[in-house]
Length: 154
Image 1: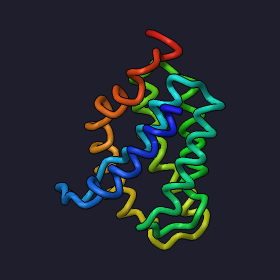
Image 2 (image 1 turned 90 degrees about the horizontal axis):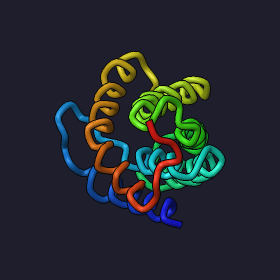
Image 3 (image 1 turned 45 degrees about the horizontal axis):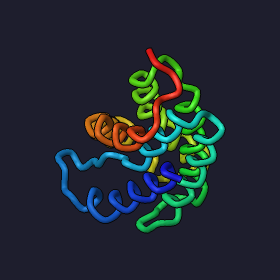
């Protein structure tokens, strides 16, 4: 229940606040991704994948959405599964998932012939989004995992 609430709160914060703040280099952190990662760290791979799928569907339908419905549902389900597996400890898992998500979204977009997926987007926008997401990740991960203990410790 707390995982769903944290995802919903992250989505509302993303849409109403974060996306409206003009940050340098034109990027923004992905709070919903971090909420999915945090919930998956404490709940495991199957719960993380289900939560990621439904969080991705919410991201797909909440305006402003300029991509096909299901693209982020697939990506967040994949990230939720990987985060739930906890490969290499919590910090390594968060960094891996934050790197995986935009690259997987670009890959899925390229497979669907999305004209917005270009080399300049991959070299310009994706690194900025990854850096901003990693900068806010300690706060969001702490907020989503503070009520439960992580499944593994290293």
